[in-house]
Length: 353
Image (cartoon, rainbow, N blue to C red; front, side, top):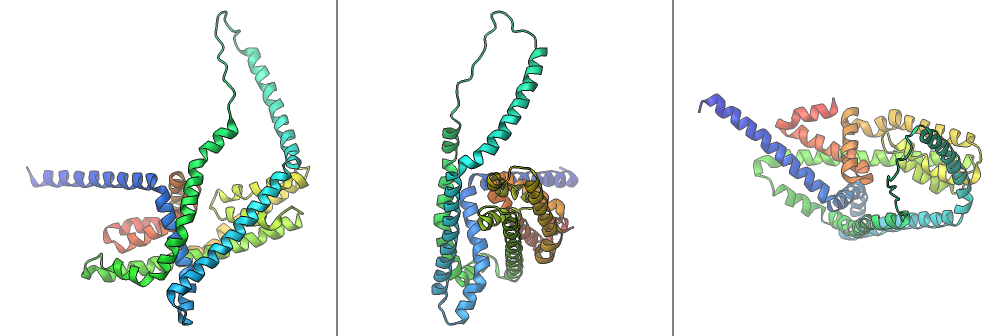
């Protein structure tokens, strides 16, 4: 076989192997989503909390003890926030009849419009033929089906919430041992490059987490003040949920409307206040996307808009809501890896172009 044909066959085989390998990786990410999401959440929290543990270690507190204290304090804070949200959700459920009336009025208006439209359509439909059978669909159990359908998601959430504290503690307490063991996985002549790549990953993730936390705090405080001025019930918790939702690129502005919409049904009976709240939340999102995120986060992550959008679409499809949260740090880490692997450097340049 000529040399040119041999090279062509080898190139095609290499491309096919890469496609097969990519398919295997995607399938693994999909089927092992619970494990991977749990691990990634623990890794991000470890990067975020490691400076505090290091500071405690400098204050002569053993690293294992400092890690345990930080994990317990973090779990306690999250438990308090979760309890407050559950308590407010319970209050919202008790007040649901007050919220239900505006929804019922709106649904009845939409239903009347649909009935009028169906009536006009039925007038131009051909008459039913004699002997034609009419199929009747039995009553569906929407609530029961929804609860049964959510059991798997609830089980996955409980499983993740159970393992994250243990993973977080071991990652914080055994940081040096894990770092040394990771270096041993590579040949001695490649460890310097691997060390530089891991250092860049650390800087990128830590800068992203600190910047995103600061932006989220600003959004939560601004949303809290806005809802308090508009007289909404539960302004802080509504602002907390709305502000966190507003962090999601592109889709966040729509997601941030939902909490004040539900809570405001009890307070407002006209569309004016809702328009004002939605306009202000949209303004917050625009300022965040164009000023705060580039200033506090984008200088370190350096992902272009197309790469960011594709990443959100892909990881959102793969892992749902958690995929939207993890999409940016995953893509940022992939960019760092591409920048340190010579054959993948064009991909890294494309991600930041």
